[in-house]
Amino acid sequence: DAGVIQSPRHEVTEMGQEVTLRCKPISGHDYLFWYRQTMMRGLELLIYFNNNVPIDDSGMPEDRFSAKMPNASFSTLKIQPSEPRDSAVYFCASSAAETQYFGPGTRLLVL
Amino acid sequence: QKEVEQDPGPLSVPEGAIVSLNCTYSNSAFQYFMWYRQYSRKGPELLMYTYSSGNKEDGRFTAQVDKSSKYISLFIRDSQPSDSATYLCAMAKGAQKLVFGQGTRLTINP
Image 1 (tube, rainbow over the protein chains, first blue to last red):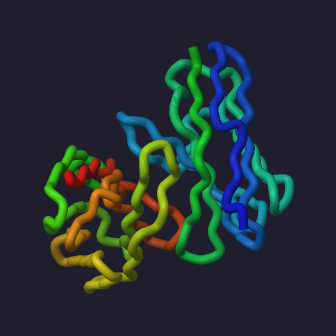
Image 2: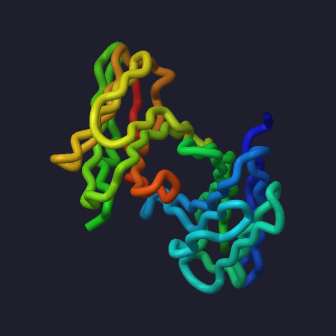
Image 3: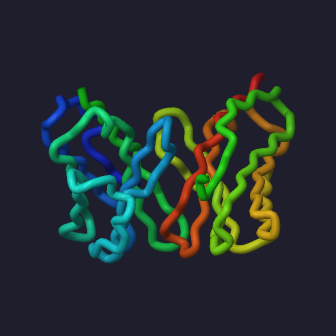
């Protein structure tokens, strides 16, 4: 298996622009997670899905952030409008049981 | 106060040394305890997983959970340069909603 796939791997954008991050989970996994990692705050859970349904979005920082999972093999995290404080590495992870498998991450820089 | 506290280091030790990494937590409802390893510019990968209290050993790695003290540890024996990475503790009430520590950056010097 190719593991969790994320795109793009790097994104540089200007403040106010819309950013869309994409994730393809491991086939057969029924949980999907979005995390954000920064030096200051560490690795934080933003939202997670079970069988394509959002279960807990309490970690989503504000209304500028939204996530969708239209089917079992694809999810998006959207930031609109983006701000410099959104600069971070965003990870997608998937699991079928206790072990979460992380993707390589998307490095986002908002200027 | 953060739910999970972990000294960010950095920690630098010579090859072959025993490494001890630790986390404390405040939420007594945590039942699942994990250690993830993260190499530079990579995603975290699960290293050890323990449910409730006790010890677990896997090769050179030993994980310990002391729920009475709200304290977990990871020991690495015969440390190797390839063990150089950031180690993150993580814990949860249910298995899914993980709360991570800040991560400890470890360097093993040849």
